[in-house]
Length: 479
Image 1: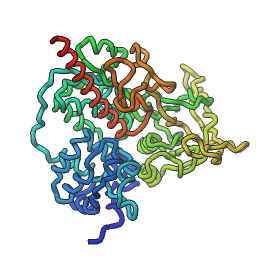
Image 2 (image 1 turned 30 degrees about the horizontal axis):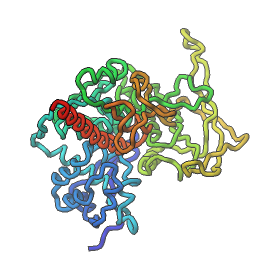
Image 3 (image 1 turned 180 degrees about the vertical axis):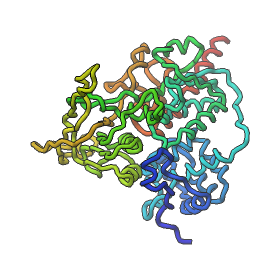
Image 4 (image 1 turned 90 degrees about the horizontal axis):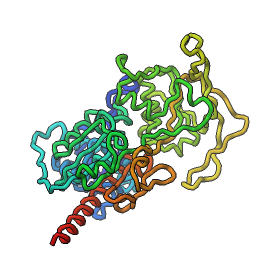
């Protein structure tokens, strides 16, 4: 039978309808579509797709199960390697990882690996009624700081080995960036809640509203009987450009804007932390977070939303799928533009503070691409005397984040780099402090969910070896 050259389309909400709601955009494969897509897999002997997966899921094996209609069997294979399959199937950049290595992709479109992973996870979550087997305790305790993807992956792998794991989360909901950073229309919060609940069933204790560095320190965790600590606290410290006008009302970091909307339901009229309902919004940046912020602003009622990016569409770092969805929904792209100033006006009607400034526009300068930078991307060069003002009443800065300095400032002996990232051994996640490991955005700065998960799994293996080795030394000393 001839192979279908293109992957099966993902059913989605109509663009005009979805731009006005927070329901998930992608609707998921049906059983029939999933089986048909799985049939496209060549089941290669050398399995290059597995090599392209940061957590090394046995991709051809799970796809074969889907092909034969054994969806629960497919889930069992995926869950050997991934603690968050329903999440990864939705937000991982498969096109640059597993799917980029797919042999079928040499001649045709690669197999829709991410779409099949999502289908399998959703099938399991909707149909599984069995009991979770809790591993036998090995008597050892590990603390995990942060409940984002790296922390959840580390906790899950350690729990499966019998460790008593406690996750300490600073916010009131577990999930880290999965709940505060990614909008409902791309990753429904009930999906994250189910994944976290799965870890609880394995025996993982999740404590929210605990700020490590304030409520407790890393050193105090050791004093409480934890034998190792994994730091997966993410990169939640926003960056700004340092241009005039960034302190005006109506200027947000994408981190704050999305957290208010995703976690605090700021779009609701009853929210205690409301977001100003802007009419014209400029989002500065070109990554996935910028797309999330722009599409959220549109759903909050903005009439015009612009993506302002200093390079061309070829260099834009966001996933192609997210860019296409944004365009379909009416987001406008101002390419080869760089902000130089945010303009404001005073509000004389505000009697308490008549000089209280609000955004009235953003001054942009046109750019052209020059020579490649250190990473191979052509550097934007500003064109003299090309400034112009865009009429907006809200500006969202989405130019990256850094690790929060709280933990490093309260943990003696923890070495960090010039960007605030915790320095670790790449092969183990081991830090400069005895018994402390780290991974994910707290180490690398803002990256992808799957890379953070891979770092969490790496650290889990190293922690298990560390505690086992330490235990053997103690037994030998006792003899």
